[in-house]
Length: 102
Image (cartoon, rainbow, N blue to C red; front, side):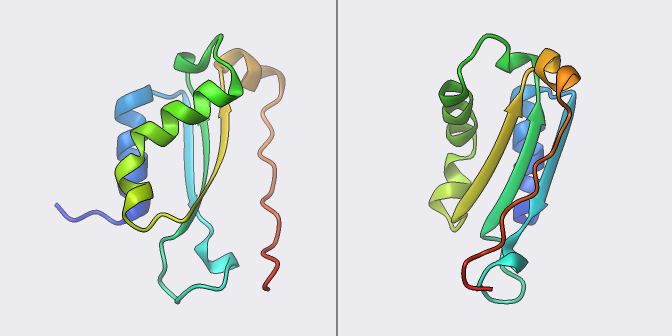
């Protein structure tokens, strides 16, 4: 089955981390890329897997899980990774900054 990049990312993250909350947003339109590009994504992920891990460790795990995507055209990945207890205290999704070239 040929899934688009957003669906592949969602599938990988759901299988790997069994999250309580997961959003994957294609933000490519905010950048100077071709019209249907799938190059810039934002991920908000809440998973028990992240409990007691540093921010860097969490990012490494997600980058490892998405290694194929990063090697095959995924240019930018904004990650907001939380444990359930952190998310319960601060369930905020910070808006992405505008691209310098807009």
